[in-house]
Length: 155
Image (tube, rainbow, N blue to C red; front, top):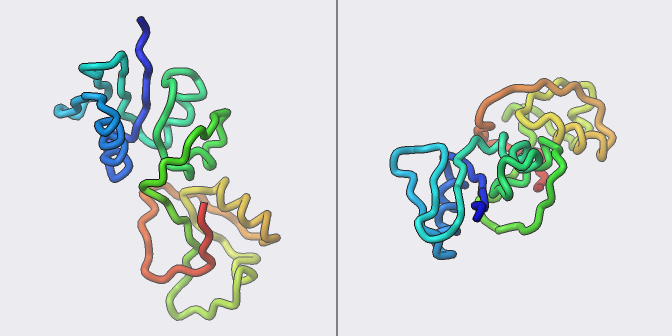
């Protein structure tokens, strides 16, 4: 019998919630040694512990049968995957930030500006939908939050 392969984030808030969900379903897994793969003790299931931004590609390619990850990664990676259920935990809010002392008249503020982001596809789609012409600069990293957010939108 083949095993169902479930990809989850290897560390962080979403990882903890995903493991908790699997545990609530009665699936016994262990990742005590921070392994990349864990086999369930009581079901034909393998858990793959991956970087969240790699999960859409692994699901699309069939390496994993399903993945538990943030919708922001699904939207950003734009892979041929189906969002079958929104679990309602570890929500993400993507926001635009400007300097605290800057006057913010609205989204038009970003016309002609250069904006740095870890999510260039999502930002480009948002700007296009709002007719904002801005240069988008890709940056890596965790996307840490600032205290002063402007132009909020939720995904």
